[in-house]
Length: 229
Image (cartoon, rainbow, N blue to C red; front, side, top):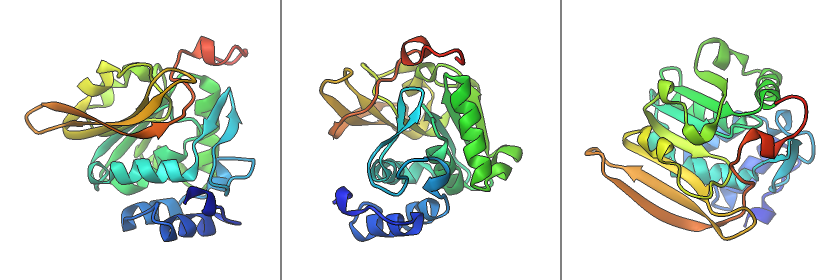
């Protein structure tokens, strides 16, 4: 039903995803209503498909953001902590921050300075700069494959690019009761969206959800050979 969810505005796009059953909870609905995708994506922002945003990466299709937020909704309750690996445009980082609220926090990590600068500008354009100023969002430059241990452990971890194998550092940074949602598989090959849960005793389980096709989670030199790395 994703292809039927295009809209002429952010509100229409989100409402169509809700009508088509892609958004199920009020928490995700309110978060996606509260962030205008047009401030994070210059080209066709309200079409339900991925779009290029530079640096050889894309902003995911809106329905994939909705899927991720629904999968992580129990781990994005007020006061919880989240990590967004490959934060790119910054949009999903903001969705997560709205869901965890004023008592929660979200770290967005990407390995290219230009992407972090872009995300900050997008967030300001969207009128959400206070989320950064008050510390609800922290945007950092780093290798997301290794996570961001100093900000953890995290209740929710989202990865926006496909890792060839499951990064153990991210699993280690999950809090008890936490959940990691990550695409796994080779570039251009068979990939799946995987759900990794850590129970309250620290036991880890892994579940393959459905096939996907994401850009690779790789090093900055391979991703972008421009001057601003």
